[in-house]
Length: 84
Image (cartoon, helix red, strand yellow):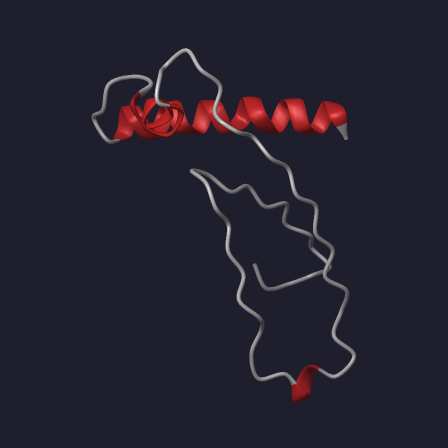
C-alpha cells in the first residue's frame, strides 16, 4: 500500500501538470492555487473504500451523499463492481 500510495501521488502530480498545459496555464499554476506556494506540499490523502454488493438492489432508490474534496480524485475501476 505504501508503494501504491507513492505511485498514485506521482500520477496525480503528472495529471495536474498536464492540466496546466492543456488549459494554457503556467506550469505549477494549479498546484500553486492549492498550496499557496509552488515549493510547498499540498495535502495528499488516500482513502480506500469497499462497497459490497447490495443484497436488495431493487429496493434502493438512491445513495447517500458522497463527495471527493480536493483537486483530483483517482478511482480504481473494478471489473466485478459496475457503476463508476
